[in-house]
Length: 67
Image 1 (cartoon, rainbow, N blue to C red):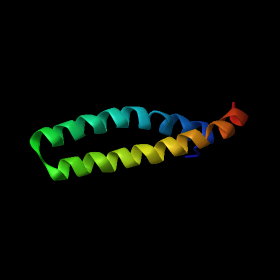
Image 2: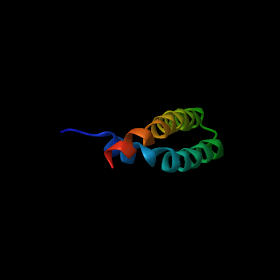
Image 3: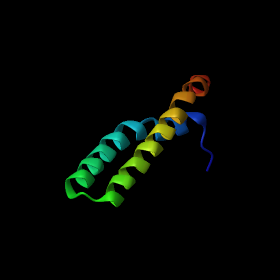
């Protein structure tokens, strides 16, 4: 299976948006239940969203050459 830069961009482009909303919901749940592990999980997810947003922002230049 050969994945080109356009495919990577489409895979990673939506993760920061949907992941941030999902992690904020988990954060609110953790704060409501006063559960440190759930709060830590949401913070790890937010860091993963930040990393995926950096990856998504670097790919458009390569995608333009494919299209």
